[in-house]
Length: 338
Length: 290
Ligand SMILES: Nc1ncnc2c1ncn2[C@@H]1O[C@H](COP(=O)(O)OP(=O)(O)OP(=O)(O)O)[C@@H](O)[C@H]1O
Ligand SMILES: [Mg+2]
Image (cartoon, protein in one colour):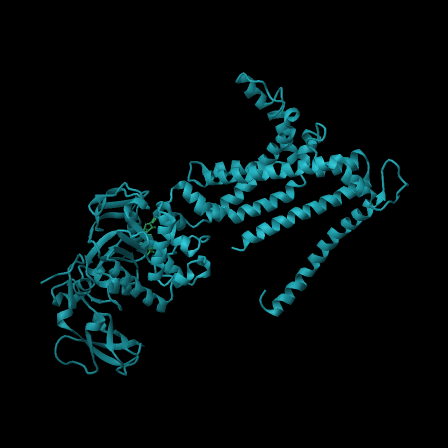
């Protein structure tokens, strides 16, 4: 009941072409995440779907219905804003129920629905408080409550967790993902945190300067990035890129190897391809160790080692790529697939 | 001002100005209280003697007092109502992204910079004059009888002039308040299906509650003492129709040369202003809590 289709959507602000041309098909009930660097047009695209901005060209269909010229409230979508945008002078009850009140529902029904939403979100004890009397996480929940109480066809989230501390963020991430699965409502979620993207999404849209670079499941993006941009954007620490003679040997303009696909050996030489160098920085996280190695011709490479190897700055190591995980890219940055 | 040290330092540093302000206030007040207990008329110098509260009795039982009290309240109340309602409207208008917005804003604010005496003269002679005024010209060109404003509706005319002067102030304060309204809140309301009127009523107006109380508080302080507009246009008349407390005290002191009576009147005005201020501070205090 809540598929969203973007058909040749374009958006310009004055002479700036922020969204050149986006075609996208969001399946009913799926959780789609927009990721991309700051300023790439994620929020703009979300606001176009919401109807808060007019599109310059193209069409938006929700559930097969053309909503290009339909006002926001009539699109059957609800939105959770980054700043939460709670109404400061209304109680939690008033905030959650405002949309229903505007829709002209009878008071008894509003109360019933608000209390239902509040109990899902553990907000029942706070129903009569004002937003300023709540913690950040509780405010976040009120904003979500306001979104779910209208039983929309789709949720739109614009970086909803960026104002929360790390622990709470992990918590809310799980709650939102679970809630979305329970309600089986389509969700579009904007974030620049790729952990959020990878863990929550059914499908990820990687945006760059308003263009869709790749649209696929998290694992597709990780295992088969379509181009250099996606390869560099998805994965942490970043994929290593090597050009020049080493890449030519693989029949590519650039090759990429993720840090976790480099095996670290203490001895020189050995079988297969390998680059030796000096460790310039070693980051010990306990569970992992990130090594930054100056590997001569191959440049500075990042390697990820599970656990502690007792390697430190200044040590010499050899990095051996896993041949099954070497990504090859042509001159234009597109992936070369065998 | 959280630590003890900063509190002490704060007191020491503010002491001189607090002391100066205290003296500044207390000396005239003490002298007024002293004069108000004397029989002190400038026409009979050298006959000042102590008469206790007789000046107060005289002032409070004077029929002019009740009339001017009523006029003061009507004037303050009406101007507040007009400036707050219209000010909200003007602020909403000039908050829109219209063409030439900066110039429009400047023009809206302009009346505030005109001296009360000058603006009263302009209104009296150029706008409201029954023969040569602009309003009279409009009325005659429409085939209507021109209104002799200051004779037919004197208090209303004063209210009009004073409102015109204070409208920019209200608009300006409310405009800045509007600009601080979170854009995302309005968008959230839009997503929630609120139409323009509901958005105004449920989102904008509650947001303006605090600045409106501030406007009311500040305007009241000044409106209780409106004088120049009355002095220039009607001189308190016809009869007592436009005499407010401030003008009554003036006429007592400088038309009847009764310094003692005027001092008593001044003190009554101080008490009145304090009563009003107490109500206002209560109201504002309640609003400022949020
Ligand atoms: N109202 C506007 N007028 C002009 N340009 C705008 C407007 N809104 C956004 N832009 C431009 O559009 C581009 C995309 O903005 P957008 O807010 O969508 O970025 P974003 O991907 O959400 O970034 P972030 O991750 O920082 O939130 C930016 O370059 C921005 O400057
Ligand atoms: Mg954004």
